[in-house]
Length: 408
Image (cartoon, rainbow, N blue to C red):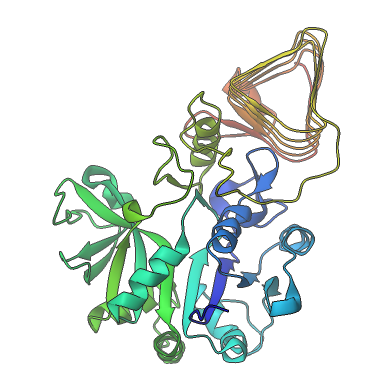
């Protein structure tokens, strides 16, 4: 058997996801459905498994039942050689309090690191859309001899103030880690671009443990990976940036190479779905060389009757388009679209029911939503708000789980 460094991967999946409300009203952010059949957490876990990182702990906290269930049902690894993906709920091992931040989440779960005793610890977030060969980043980290490697994505400098920014020298060593700076530094090889942190890190195990212990002892710390732990390494000259654009993923297309989206808001979540349904999608779900794994329900194929149509859309198993028209939309399993109805630029989650003559436009419908005959969603935002629906700053109407939209 080829000798590999011993790696423990930790996925931080405990965030509340307040900016995705009402989609996170009843579930953790990483458990939010995406792309018809997947959930947000499937992307980071697929990247890890495809990269050969097969010992993964997922730290959960808020509203974690559906997330825990999804991981348990979907991510079953062979334990014959010690592989696993396991949810780890907040256990209050160090006292009667929940996680105080991302760094505290790992500190309170230090038993995982002690038990695994890895050489390196991979710490990734749970709710971004991208493909990445993490093994390439791991090799760059090992070659550097440094204690920390932070994944960075190039963003236009004019837009960089919205991100945590990495100020790196020409040799990739990080000089500063800046939280949403007013004047972001440009890159040595591209002055009009800046490195934004992807929230993905690789640490030498001993260096990480020492940093977490120091952070836990600091009463003034926020106990945050980006806000506290990374600056510790930067101050010691012990951190480098890994340029995400250097990552080569098998099967990537020209359009989706280096694609990365933070879907932390309703508008970003909507835009990421629209990226899926173009003829040449900005993110290609059909890459067989680097698949996104998920649990597939046992349902019949999608069915089109009474001249029902779907154009530039994803229609999942068990759905029936019965005389309605669907355009530039993503339909999850068991959606029904009835005669003379129209669904345009929308995301319909499991078991959404669209009645006859209904219109759904630029909207997100959570599970089990019913749009009654002749009702409209996304056509009149004031009417949507009067019903108690959420309308985002970008004009996307969100209908919460189990809601019934009646005709006015």
